[in-house]
Length: 91
Image (cartoon, rainbow, N blue to C red; front, side):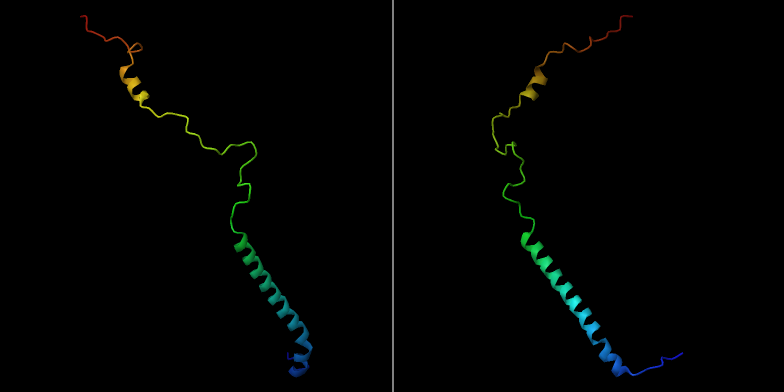
């Protein structure tokens, strides 16, 4: 079955406004996409002024502890009080 009216020149004129509207919407969406990408690139992942630290948490590093090898020497010289007595064959 064929279309009853095949005057394509008249159809072109009737479709100009809707096609122009569709093109405008696509251009608007592309502009919004570029604005979003530019905004995300500008904002980035930079920390805010607070630095992500909650109130009441100290970020100051102190070096109060002394590092020694006492744990190693303490195990070497520790008395064997908990050691089981040596078993001998008394047979």
